[in-house]
Image (cartoon, rainbow, N blue to C red; front, top):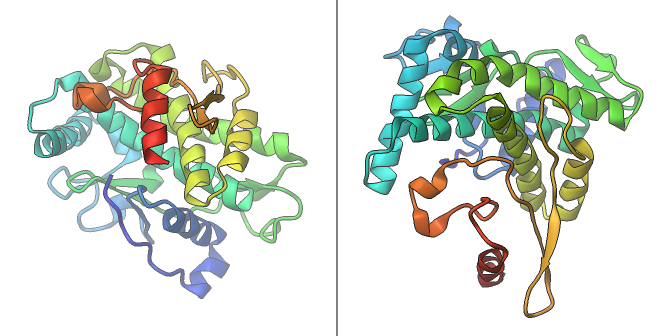
Length: 292
């Protein structure tokens, strides 16, 4: 994903919409998250929801085969430009799905990790500038929080009693948002429900882990992700599954093995994902130690 500078939050907007400020914090903390906060939904803007207008909302992707194909076509074009070959259609669809799952899940989980808020993002409130791979989020008012949140009394806030209640809200918020898209794109990625929900779990966990590394809080992020998905919690078929590898210098490194495959290995076989089921522990250690 490309990097997009985050714009400074407007104090008036932040006061009126706590989630706008929260999303900007997430975006500013995540170099690889190509996203921006917007003030109107895609369908209400001149270029909104038109296949030649670049911006497609999440609800449209789930209900329109034409829109979904345009989104996948744009991903196939990026793959050709970056890797110099034509991807299989299911690979382009898998990569497009991965981009959506990772980005939207990180917006939701990032708000939870940074400010203990779990936003409910409606699919229509996520725009995808599919030509540039840029995600847009329209701040809503519906979010769960703990009793001590400064915004607990604002319209749309739903107070939960404890941290586990907030984690349950997070799992539900992500699952409810992505379910329509998983149903729509499943035949194009040629995967069944368990594999699709495995991808959703992987991207939820990897987003939390990534944010922790960006903030130099990896251990906290690993603990948080492990508590979020300690194992299979329906509809997610498996847990975070973090483990430690010890290298030749006696240094310990955190790793996990994805529940499913994001198909990146088909684009660059020499650089399969570090958490790919195809990547053995010896190779993981080699690459981790070379990066240290």
